[in-house]
Amino acid sequence: MNVDPDGWCTPAAGQDDEAFIAEFVASRPPLTGAEIAELRAIFRPALARIAQRAVPEADTDAA
Image (cartoon, rainbow, N blue to C red; front, side, top):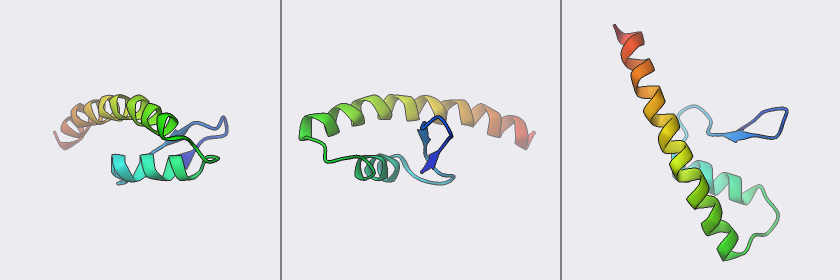
């Protein structure tokens, strides 16, 4: 997991979504089951959007 100076967390290069979410949750104070579910609901769509943006960039780099 990468953490920028403002505290924003992003997956490390090659880190899959589940590993990132697990690392993020583990790095926080103890969370309730509801809080963990809410974090997963927030991060999964955001990570999917990032992955979608990366595909066109990779296609452009390959060309």
